[in-house]
Each structure stands twice: as C-alpha cells, then as structure tokens.
Length: 213
Image 1 (tube, helix red, strand yellow):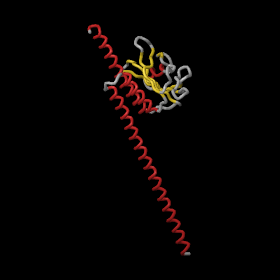
Image 2 (cartoon, one colour):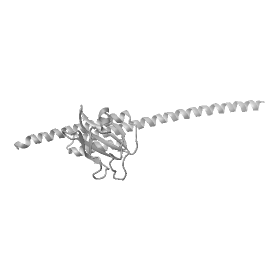
Image 3 (cartoon, helix red, strand yellow):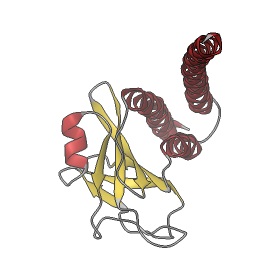
Image 4 (cartoon, one colour):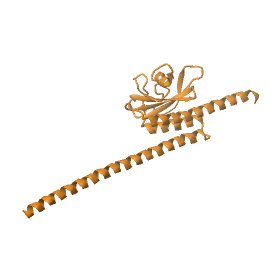
C-alpha cells in the first residue's frame, strides 16, 4: 500500500514538473521570438536609415543629376526586391514622361515614354502615393536576364503639388506595401524631386547667363 501511494505521489510530482518545464519552455520560446522580432525591426530601421542617408548624400553631392536619380532608383529597387527599375521625368509642356535612368532593362526597352493619362500612372497620380499594379505586355519592358515583369510599383516624384517624374520598380509578382515602406519610398521620391528641382534651376541660370557671356 505504501509503495502504491509513493508511486502515485511520484507520478503527480513528475507530472507537475513536466508542466512547469513545458510552461518555462513556451515562455522562453515566446521571449526568443520577441527578441528576434525586435532585432529584425532594429535591423530594418537601420537599413532604411542607411538608404535615406545614401540618397540624401547623393542629392547634396556634386554628382550629375542622372547619377543622383540612379542612386535613388537602385536604392529603392533594392529595398523592394525589384528585378529592374526606371526613372521617368516629366517633359516640359507635354502631358508625358520620358525615361531618364534605368537598371537591368534591355537596350531600348519598350516604355521609353509614359502618358500621364494612361494606367497605371493615372491611378498613381490620383492616389498621390506609391501603387502596385499589373503590367500588360504592351507596357512591360524587357529584362536583361530575359522575360518581362508582371507587376510594377510606381512611385510619384513630386515637390509640393508639382509632379516632376515617377519611379517604376518592376516586380516578378504582386505584393502588398506596408505603411513604413510607403513612407520610405515617399522620402526617397522627395529627395529625388529636390535634385530635379535644383538641376532645373541650374540649367535656367546657365541659359540666362549664356547670351551675355
């Protein structure tokens, strides 16, 4: 009888110990996930800060406008996992944009020009924020590695209410944009708009001085 009671008590103690160990394990596992998530967020924040810093430094440097736009474009593409990208600038006096910079596109890829009243640009200008849209075969440029992208992330480049251009980041598949990604893309676009504005001002000053020189 004593042995039976002792065995029963031991079984209860082992069960309690097992429950305690399992509880501690689950708690530690949850804390580990929280730490991993915090580290990932911190790493992502640093990466985003480094990206904005790189673009801002390019804007404030002596680089040519085309080089500054290329930095903004490639940094944005890297962040979003784009397979290629293109930067378009508004053509003065016309309701269209022309491609000024690109990467990972074939030579003379289709889509050298974009009309402001055509999709997906029209939806982006209406929304006033980055938009992911499907690309039809008539508008999809060729990729250096072969094939064509199926979707494009369009980021308007504007200063205040003045539209100055747009970035097109070509994606192999659709994706949802987080608010922090949208804010970061808008920050890069604002830096690009500043560079475009400075470049336009410099060209105007040169034209003004030219007749008297």
